[in-house]
Image (tube, rainbow, N blue to C red; front, side, top):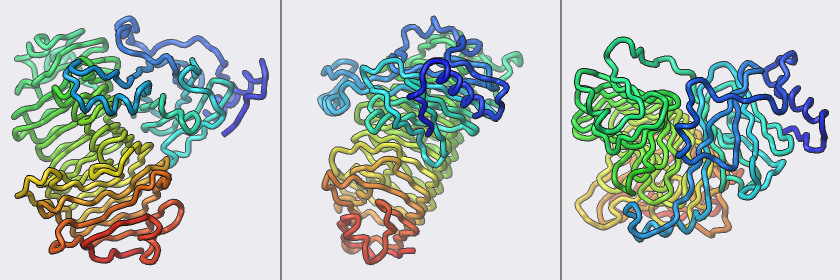
Length: 515
C-alpha cells in the first residue's frame, strides 16, 4: 500500500493523479483529484431519493483513465427493534441489540477491461480514516492507495470486494460489487417482453401475451410476486430497484437476470423468501442481480438443475435471513452471500459452490450440512472466502461448517453426507469457531467421505470456544474424513497436533487421514 497522506497541496494531487494513471499503465491521461463526476447514463437520481443511500462513502468508477462515473452507494442499517413492527418477533431483539448502530454500504456496476475505483470517506462520525486499508478477498491481490480521506484501487477482473478501513471499519463497511459486462441484455423490440416502468404488482401481472418481463431503470413495487406461468424471462435492468420478491410455483425454466436490485425492505419480516422456486420449479437460472434487505431466505430453489451466478445478497440483519439454497444437480458461482442464518446450504446431491465470498453475522453456519433429512452425495465447494464470521456463541448451528441434524429431537429423520470436497477455503479475519459438526443423536446423521483440502483458516481463541466433530450415534461413526494441507492459525494440522491445536472435541469418528 502506498501512503501519501504526508504530502500537501498540489504535490499530493499530482501524485494521486499519476498513481491513478499508472494503474492503467498510461501516464498521458491524468485523473484530477476532484474532476466533475457524472452518474452513469440512464440513472435518474431523483427516483432513488427515498431509497437509503450512504452518508459515509462516495464511490466513483474511472473508466479508460479519464471518464469518471459517480456511483449510487446504498446503505442498509441494522433495524431498531420494536415488537410487532413489520411482524418483528421477540427473537428479533437479539440481533438488533448485537448490531445496534451498524450499517453495511454497497455499490454495484459492470465493466470489462480495467477500471479504477475511487472511494471517499465522507464522514468520520461512524468510522475514522486510517492508513490501514485492505481490499478483500486477499486472494485478488488488490493494493489500495490512500491519500487523505480517499482510497483508490485498480480492478482488472470482476468480483465482490470489501473495502476495510482499519480492523473495525467493517462495522460500517463498504462492499463494491464489480460485475462482468452484460452480454445477454434482452432486445425489447421483439415483442416478447412486457416493458415496465415504475411498476406495481398489477402491472407485472398484466403480461399475459408475453413470455418476458423487463423492469426498466427506476423504482418498482410488486410485493410478493408469483411469476405467471407464461413468463420465462424476468429482466432487471441496471438502475432498476424492484421492491418485492419473485416466486416460481409450478413454473420451471424461468431465467431471472440483469444488473438491477430486488429488495425486501417493504415486506414484513419472514413474509416471503426473496427468490423462491417450489412445486417442481426446476431449471431456474438466477444471474447478476443484487438481492437486498432480506427478511427471510435470499434464494431458495428447491427444484433440480438450478444455476445461480454473480448474485449479490446483502442487508439481512435478523435471524432466518439465510443465504442460498439449491437442490439436486445445481451450481452457485461468483456470488456474494451475507446471512444471519445458514449461508451456504447443501442438502441434496451433486451441488457445486465455486468462487463465492461470504459474510456471516452471529447466527447460522457458513456451510450448513443438515437440519435433519438432508441427504447429499457428491458435493463440491471450492474457493470460498469468508470475510467475517461474527458468532457470539458456539451453539450447534454456528461455525464455518455446521451440522445440526435433528436439533429438535423430532425423531424419524435420516441424514447423509457422502463424498464431499470442500477445497480452498479462507477466513480473511479470525473467526470464533471453525467446526460445529455435532448432530443431535435423536436421529442418525451419517458422514462417509469428507475432504477438507487447502484450507487457510484463523480462529480467535479469546472466545474460548472449542471445535467439534462428533457423530451423535456410536453405531454410526463418521468415516472418510481427510485433512489435506489444512492450515490452522498458520500451522498445518497433522495426526499428532490436530486435537490440541484446534481444541477439537471428537466422538464416534474413525481417525482422519492427514496429507
